[in-house]
Image (cartoon, rainbow, N blue to C red):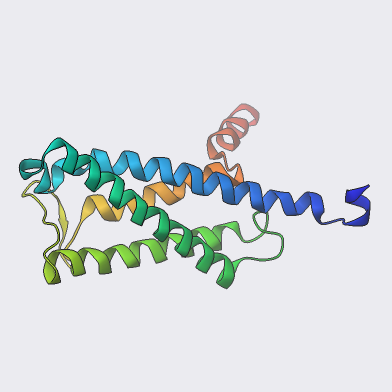
Length: 166
């Protein structure tokens, strides 16, 4: 009955499911990434176990806020009413660009201006922007994986199907 009275009701759940999936997987992936790249920062050598855990959890909290903000901004600027079925690529590209852009700014602010953290010698640094490769890759890989999961994008199934029929 609801679907007849409100034809968009069933479709409306799709965006909410996609949003929930995106944020949940992104949060888990950011937490994993924060722990994984801790050895690339000087805190790895100077911090206690408690300080390392606090740093990773604290940074993940910030990552979640950035993730939400980047996606909402991307949705406001580039989504169509049929999202996630419509304009999914544009929204993803914008969310990644917003996340990477903020990360470049944050790395500069917290390393060069505030001195809040520092890279170890083993952190690969991107020369022109002077930002660590790991945090930049985090803001490409995590949103891409979370978005693919959220909208049900499975390129390997399409490739496998084409190979079977090719």
